[in-house]
Length: 240
Image (cartoon, rainbow, N blue to C red; front, side, top):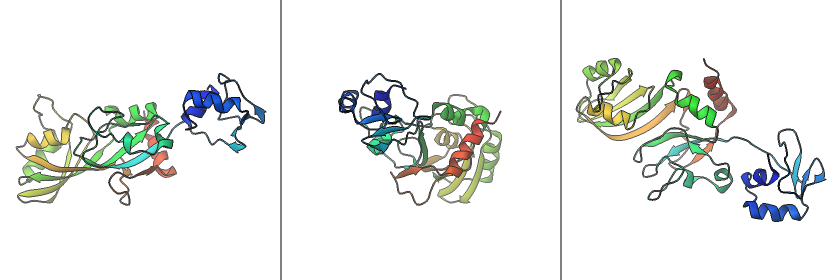
């Protein structure tokens, strides 16, 4: 990796600002001063110092966010605030993106990373990663609905969903449920309930596989994954 790209990715400024920093002679590789911005370095195996401080290089970041409503799951948007807009500058420079999408009005667990390979694996239908949602439903959810979801329902465009595990927490004019599905079609949870003549009025994602939303995270807050959580994600990528 070029030294100017590395430093820019690590938040030391634009390419132009990094070039100026290099000219000052404050960047070293294994104690050797680097001034040429096109010099290639290996941060995994070489000691890179900036102003005598060792650079702790990370190729990837893995963040858990409690996504708030009103924010879109995208890297940029011309009209709305995005989940990336909620990140600190030192995380933004790593060029992360949300893994999958939560609707604008949906809350809850969102994984944000710059690891494209892992994101692809998590979203692959072949991996059957269960995603569990809590929802409030306008209308009385019945055991008949539970059975229909267990078989899969037909969406408005004719698509037959995979089976969903629907659990009724509280039934009434406004029912409360938890639903686990292994797909991520556009507005899928909302459309599944529309298929049984009901309407989702509140939706929150609780988990992806064994990755569970940290209850200490307020809406809009995020943190890095723990080692245990990271190892779970890696175990998914290693599945056949």
